[in-house]
Image (cartoon, rainbow, N blue to C red):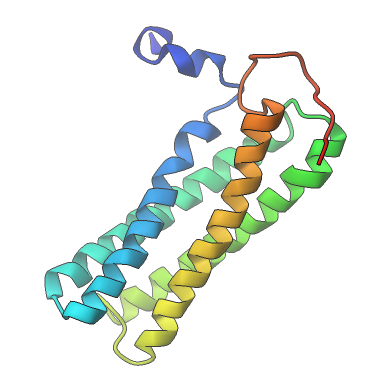
Length: 160
């Protein structure tokens, strides 16, 4: 059934590549919305930002779970695992921790912290930077070393 609905998904080693795009979009979107809300002062933007942060954090949790499940079975050379996968995993755990912390902070001062607001916004930017770096490692594994599918023979050794 899944193969008929999503034929490309049948080539994936696991569902992690499908899941990861949602938290990337929601967390980066929340950052943009919080900045707009800070500048404009719109209550509806603040609430939209909070909901985006909530969805992004929930998605990050799911991405972490699917990533942990996928990491042992992903078909990459040991050199790729140590040069890319380990860094990807650590950066994405850090992203999840930062997102979770910011979500708790935003929920306690809903919809947007007033006290130390600029520190909150700076932490959102830092989270996006860590997220982007971690996603870059993940993208390299998928596009340079076929970590997400079975399009070519495995394993492919790491090269700079």
